[in-house]
Image 1 (cartoon, rainbow, N blue to C red):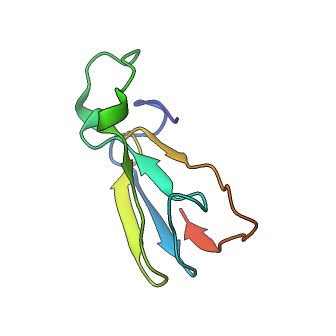
Image 2 (tube, rainbow, N blue to C red):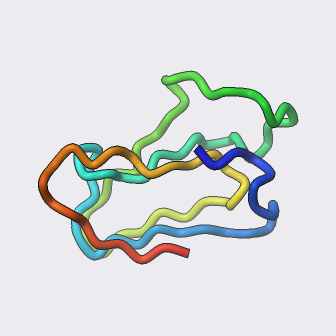
Length: 84
């Protein structure tokens, strides 16, 4: 996880998919609202994680200070994404 404060609050990030993105092939995981947490050592609870599953041609945008990570790819297929 990239903790809040690791990126400037005004920085926006995105992941655009050129192939389908699912939990099994490493979809990005975000914790909505974590960019507002005052306690930067706070750990999210499992129910707060959201997996950004999406078809090819889609994108997810979030603030750089939002907790986010790449999920585990448990498949033999490597996906293609554009990130910033």
